[in-house]
Length: 507
Image 1 (cartoon, rainbow, N blue to C red):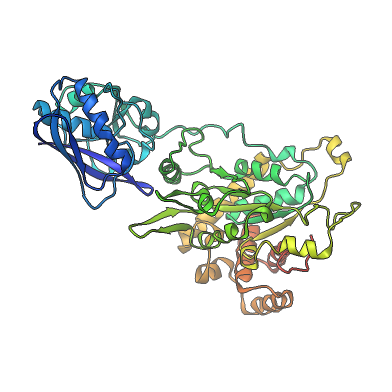
Image 2 (cartoon, one colour):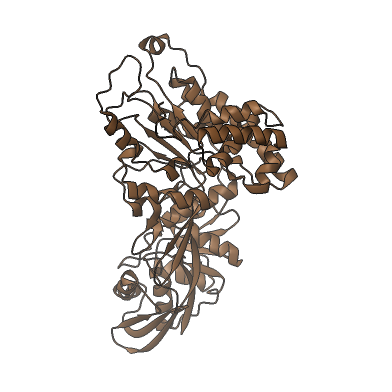
């Protein structure tokens, strides 16, 4: 019997799998046991043909066991360890270093090692287990190198893997290291290119400073989409742990974060996206858009055009910061700590309430259009920001106004204030996460100000959730202004960002 250590994906992390091969007799035929899926079962033919490329001229009947037997095995990453165990058992080759390495990758019929989607997951598992290293396809080295300090052996053929596990040096040896921080990607726009929308830019900075959700309402061509796509440029870069966590979610979806590793992710699904695409799931559960936006931004353009049942699935992850996908045989948890930015027109034609333009939508059509967004979902936006059409004269003048560099520095300073307060008082790191006693300590309202605020909110008919979000937003406004105390002026300013809370409100 021969044994090789490997790994399979389980949610956003890898689980160790021990691949055991036992030879029964001469003749074709391999049986794979241990809850393999169709892709793993198909590997039998690839393994047998690849074994011939390293000298097993006479086929051997074998049983390959994948332990633990209760863990479902999916994908092609087990091809390579199955082939190594089969060859070692069939040719009697002693794998003296089999316990020291994880082995993962897909193989071709000629024994070539071809690919390993999501290489980051087994790499992190190998480091967590304290192993000597990870053996994987050479093409997957770049992703696995994100794991600092891990020894990696990039191989191109099955024979190289067998030689490595026998104790002979083979393959391309690399040492993982954290990537360097680079400039912001050129695909991220500059808010300075958006002219005439200074209040909306400032509102975006407030949202970025505290990690708040924001809804923009304005006519077509007012710059809503342009503003949203420039937002990653004013957010602080991710810390190493957050960047790795984000990369893991993308690896679980078969995506790579090699480009822009420290940049907050920006996801903008089309309004035809299904609930499953947005929240995740499927027969083989995968992360959805809300998880792919973890530690970053989820932008929903033309918000009322999304199906109502699609939008309603956002409510739970917006509160819990994670997605739980329950199936009859398993439960998967995916992180979903994201900022939600959305844009919509004020009515179907887009010109309702716009000075100088005629709206041709009947009042009932306007009400029905806005009614596509439920009150509970609307309640979860901390800022409701109106935008107007920009005069042509302002566009021709060419004045930039607030640009991304200026706002990024203000946001960075506000985030540092929050982190300092979090360390001193034991609070969450962002204002958007404050609740209960933590929110009371951060805001510090006295009894008199509480009484006045309660009266104002009752007159506006706002919900309890809106009250909490107004206090969070007021704390972010104070942080941007470099103020230790949340004044009544900041609270009133925060209230002004709730203009869509009542159905009869107009932008």
